[in-house]
Image (cartoon, rainbow over all chains, first blue to last red; front, side, top):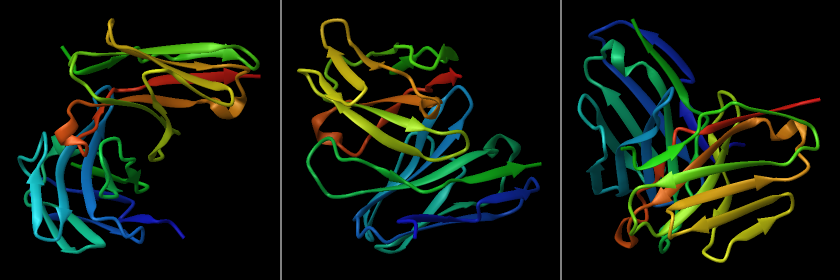
Length: 114
Length: 112
């Protein structure tokens, strides 16, 4: 079974709709992240959480919100989706280690906003 | 200027070839460096870390040049299965070990 899972894997929605992307992990990691990937831009950090009570904005948090429901669950919401939020979204986890810790990614959610 | 820059490619090479990618980074205080591999429509996965002294893992060799602010990945004896996008990743500061800065990737195509 995959250590980091994301649901849904694909979603098509319309402008203005509220969307929630969910991430679960069985790795026992404290840290979780949400990224988006766009062609030619690489992965960009949206939000990150070091534990259930610690949530931080990343590079591109505008238009997004998150909830860390438990150590193993971290969800990303688009309150009112817009077409430029069409992207591939990845959740990732990492252990609480000194510098250089590896991040483990989920399989991604492909979101299309029409 | 982007913090991490890569040639997008694609690099199209025959099986058995040796191919090298470079990646430049803008922050001279950057602390840690990695190569991740991403297959088409899949998640990125760590390929190898890049140490100051350079490191080798089988057919893959990674090197760091701090003076010129670039890292490199050399793949020897390319296999069809090496076809993927290779992401250069930099951690800019010691107090931000969570913060990975990703390059946009270099695409490699290995042909029979």
